[in-house]
Length: 227
Picture 1 (cartoon, rainbow, N blue to C red):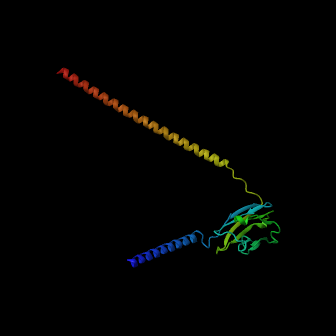
Picture 2 (cartoon, helix red, strand yellow):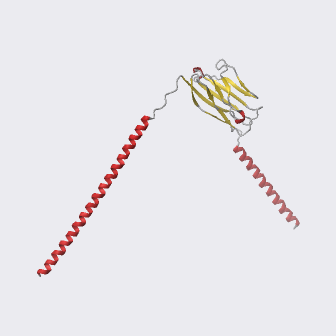
Picture 3 (cartoon, helix red, strand yellow):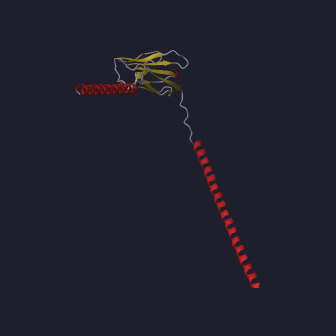
C-alpha cells in the first residue's frame, strides 16, 4: 500500500511539473508573438508640400517593443533626388545626435524630435527649390533585428494651390436637393389623386348597386299588386 501511495504522489508531481512547463512555454510563445524580434515600425507622412522660403518639420516616429538604449540605438536621415538612387546622409545618431554640415543644407537643418518619445524628426528652415526630393528615415533599436525605414516625398512649391471654392458644390447640392424635393412632392400628390379617384369610383359603384336594388324591389311590389 505504501509503495502504491508513493507512486501515485510521484505521478501527481510529474503531472504538475508538466502542466507548469506547458504554461511557461505558452507564456513564452505569447510574449514572442506580442513583441517579435522584428517589431520595428516607423510612422511618417509619405507626401508633404512646402512653400519656397518657409520652414517645415519632417516627422519620423518609431514604435518598438523595447526601450531605447542610447548605447545601441542608431538612426540616419538621408536625402535623394526624385530620379536618383544616390542617398546623401545629413543627420545621424550614434550615442549622440549629429547634424552633418553638407553643401546642400548648410546650417538649415536642425533636430526637432525627442528620443525619449521615439521621435527623431527634423526641421528645414528657408526651404529651397532644390530641397525637393525624397527623405529617408532609418531607425535601428536593438534587440529589434530589422531596421525600420520611413520615406517622405517633399514637394517644394513656389506658391500654394488656390483653396477649393465650395460655392459650386453648395449650389449643385441645393439644386439636386430641390429637384428631389419636387419629385417626392409630385409623387405624393399623384398618389393622393389616385386614391381619391379610386374612392370616388368605389362610391359610385356602390350607389349604382343600391339604386339597382331599389328599382328591383319596386318592380316586385307593383307585380304583386296587379296580381
